[in-house]
Length: 163
Figure 1 (cartoon, rainbow, N blue to C red):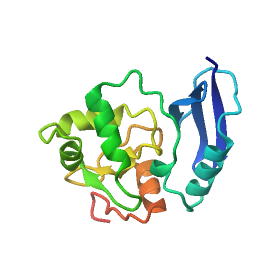
Figure 2 (cartoon, rainbow, N blue to C red):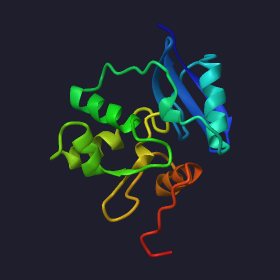
Figure 3 (cartoon, helix red, strand yellow):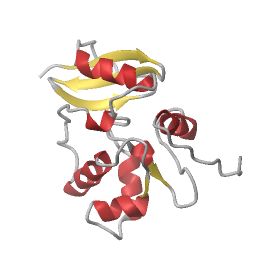
Figure 4 (tube, rainbow, N blue to C red):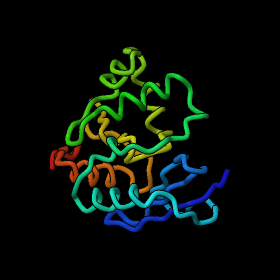
């Protein structure tokens, strides 16, 4: 099976899609990207991500693309599946996502799944907020990128300092 990267330039910078054959293994938002050969990837997905980054549609969580889920546990897959059901422009808390995934007492474990999400933007972990504010974001760009993604979707989250 061919492994490689499809690099996309968009309003968010360069995004690299890591493919294993025709299955999406990961979305990389930060350089340095893995050392893999370039592959053509999925032109339709690339165009949709460019439109999204420019403030257009579609909702990236609704884009149909096969995801490489072999290394995920059942719990992780349930959490990520529940996360994809959060509509663009909406947010939820870690506790709400744990409940939606069928594990209402697992808010902290949900946070760990968010931290290791292999497909940021397509599986929109930026839509999960901490009880006391925006929370963290493990992708390069951190909370500033999370705020930018939320703003693209029409969500305004006050800064923790009240501004």
